[in-house]
Amino acid sequence: MTQMRCPLNEAADISPHEAALIREEGELTYSEYEALVSGCAAHLRRLGLGPGDRVGLAVHESWQIAVLVFALLRCRAVICPLPGRTARAWMGALGIRHVVADGGRIEEGMEARVKRWSPEEVIPSFYEGQDRRDQAMLEMDQPATILPRRPRVGGGEAILHSFGNYYYGARGVNHAVRLSSGGRWLFTGSMDTAGGWHALFQCILGGAALVLRSGRPPDPAGLRQDRITHLTISVSELERFVEVPAAGEEPSNLRAVIVRDGQQASEWMDRARHAGWPVCASWDIPEAASATTLAAPMAAPAEREGSGPALKYRRVRIGGNGHILVGGATLFGGYVEGPVVRRPVDGEGWFDTGQLGRLDEGNCLHVAIRKPPARASTKRRKSGEGTP
Image (cartoon, rainbow, N blue to C red; front, top):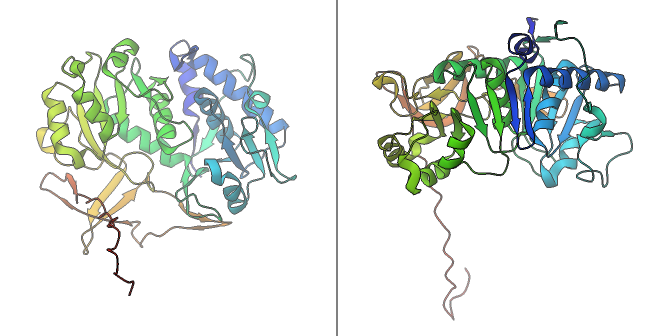
């Protein structure tokens, strides 16, 4: 097993007084963030949490999730975000016996043998913890998260990612968009999702600040106010950016606006570029940690076509059936089905995504445009028409 120093532990040594997390309530520096994480990890160990334990996560506050993620990784635990109404079903399907949850969110009907802690019980109320000169080590292949893919009563497929998947996923994106110290990555979604893990790892590995604005959709004025340099948005959010009157006044700090599945909305991408926004189309699948391809705005013109070329630490090719095949260091550990992990890759490590696409001469990926499903007719049958 390959070990490396925890990226947060290292960042706290290099940039102790730089902002790590920017919340509505104020900033947490890397030194403060590290102290909270090390104190939380020590507390969880005292409570009996051990390597390999699967821990359900149902926490609302984004900054608390950011603390818990690295504390749980240092305990060698596996993080299992619990989705809403199907939380208890997933707890049973994944064999979860430890839960960190906000009061009342999943307490009703919980089995007596499940240990439940609130965030306030395990996260220190002050900056205690180990001296950051004491190195916290992580293993590249240690299981990190199990993310439900099809949340339904009775279980479903869940995706296992390792610490190494997230590490190499973040390094590849950072290399393409040049995220570094002084950068500010805006995140407006829920931190207990794959998008939250990706943004967190990208900022810590780049020494940048993660700006948490949960529930607030990004807008040009907010980007200027928060001095945002990087963010990831959906196609619908891109449309709102282009349509607002201030869209032409592109914030001068912006270096990259990653648009998920941006190739699917080429007209909006062209309008955004014309307005001066540094947009870049990305393509990803749940089975790969972070984006797989990216058309970076500062890349050569030949590498900005379609969804762009494969990022570092990824591999992409087209199979004989026209399907997009993915491999590399970001590819998942497999589908979790109870205690069993199934990894459907071929002998060369290629995963068949089931999506159609092609690679052009510049090795840029062009994903087949997905057509919306046809709507079923809602017209009532005329009087006198029977059912066959």
